[in-house]
Amino acid sequence: MDSLTQFLPIIIMFAIFYFLLIRPQQKKAKQRNAMLGALKKGDKIVTIGGVHGTIQDLSDDTITLRIAHNVNVTFDRGAINSVVSSSNEPAKSEPAKSEEAKEESK
Image (cartoon, rainbow, N blue to C red):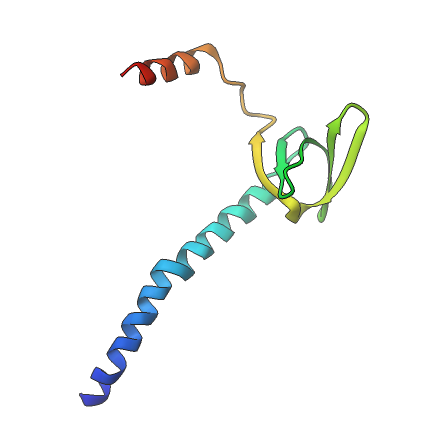
């Protein structure tokens, strides 16, 4: 019984670290891997360095971005920070904007 009470603070500390640090980091890594796996031609993305572009070509390890007219640059997949808009995602229409205006007026 005495040995259990000695190790109880260490066990509690490990549980706190797991729920506050390790678990959220694993969840974020899982979401990032899903985002990188779902990339497709035509997606508009932002790289870690802040370069905006549209995906022109994909391979297992690299992507080719069009950042300006006739300017294509090749990046590693890991250099993608976020997807701005997906190629199969419909553009925001007027009803979505009017809903935002209603929320702002409240």
